[in-house]
Image: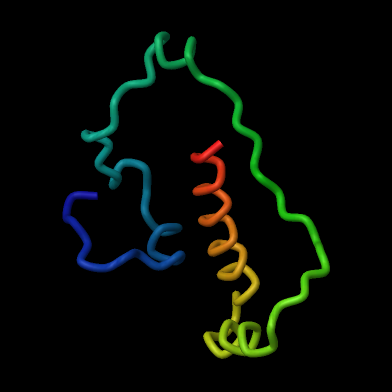
Amino acid sequence: MKKPYGKPMTAAEIAATTDRDIDFSDMPELDDAFWQNARLVEPDRTQSVTLRVKKSVLEAYKAQGKGYQTRMNAVLESYARTLQKHH
């Protein structure tokens, strides 16, 4: 993209962008050394669970709108990462 954008692009703007309009100049080439050290990373899938939380906590997340479960998971994931650093 020849000009920097002041705001994130919408999905429609991204879909309308052709490969030749994308500026790849700041991306390094993926040479043989990169692929020698590359490793497969599987996505961390979600799992349905039953979890008891205070009603006030659930209401606070729901009050922020759609995606409250994703936001709750992000907070839990962030905390879980701090636990992994200590072990």
